[in-house]
Length: 363
Picture 1: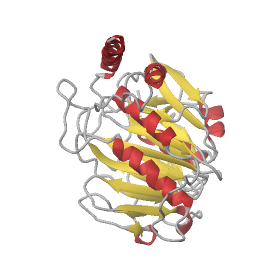
Picture 2: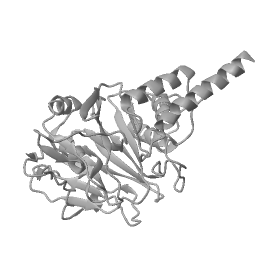
Picture 3: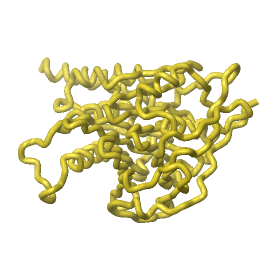
Picture 4: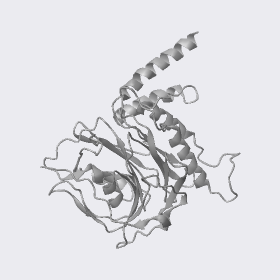
């Protein structure tokens, strides 16, 4: 009887903690897997209330960009080529560059970017792309961004909602960093231990909630709703449950299937397990939404996987099969509109005029 009361108390406390995540935010999840033989794989789900008209883009080195935020916006030339998933054809929501650096943007309702007074401004639409263009490792990115060379500026999205986002990055070594603007100040969490990210509350509170669930243990009780704190707990447990090497009894589909392919499939299974089926809504939190797509980035082998919630196939892009040399054209793979792809799609990218990143009006 004591054990039953203890469990009931545990569940009650968990419910109270999880309630802190009931903010009207889009629900995404990101998790980093680290295995043997230098295997690092980052998976993420994109949960959104409507079609984002996402396509995949291959950007070469040497592209000239600016921050699309007024006369004093930063300007740069891309050092590295990248493959990205666009959002509304207005910005890069997710992607990996040719060095294996991955950038994922996720919703955070508590974001407060402060003012741009005294600093150059950078449109939110280019935050992830700036990182992919300029850095090979998380350490490089943190060293530069902690200087706050610019202030991120947000704007209204086509669905009428303001883009309130935080940024997660990871590299081929397994290093990771989370960037949030809270109460007008940039907060950075940097280290290999920061493997999982969801949405609200702020990251420090997410870590506290997850510490609570770790004490209970994932095989004893796991929170199961689509709330951010619950998904954080499940993703944390499941990503660490994947074997770091081929476990005895693993069945290979074909004799020469690589361990990395098994690992990528395992990470995708985690992202699917924390996804929200199409059509599910949350009363009182209408923007906690269905999963519309997932990505898995194999940072050792530089392969970018894409998994649409409305397509029967997962497909992938080996970056080695694309040309990123300066002067080569920007290329596009159409995903929006029900396009169906399978297998290696690198040869299906075609030259295309790049989308225009969302500009922000800065006084």
